Length: 139
Image 1 (tube, rainbow, N blue to C red):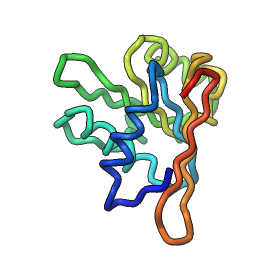
Image 2: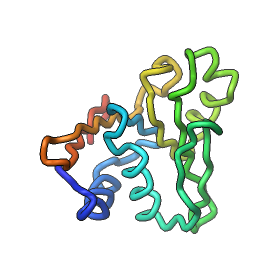
Image 3: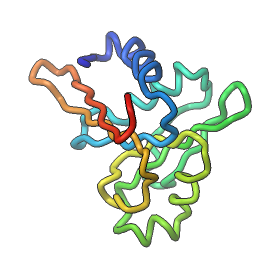
């Protein structure tokens, strides 16, 4: 699917409609591909009214859903390896059953549940973004 800032809400709505039962979503893409911007749109669609920011320094941000549940926004950019991610408690969050939206998952690939949805964001020459989903489960 292609999207731009003008139709990011529609792309986010589509995304939630096709993710199925995946609670952990790993977002891959180069710096500036729009991972955080897309995650902000995903949170907005779910009714989150908190300010959604990149957890680059805190590693994990928790956003409260209207029903009382949570979405965890995780950024592994500053993580060195899987052991550091485990020590930071990231693996615990990924296996908690709550929704986890993770940027830079390639920094600690061994900590993810087997049914993690892999999402690839690419910048297209016209400035729009292409989103591609890959999973071991049906999407």
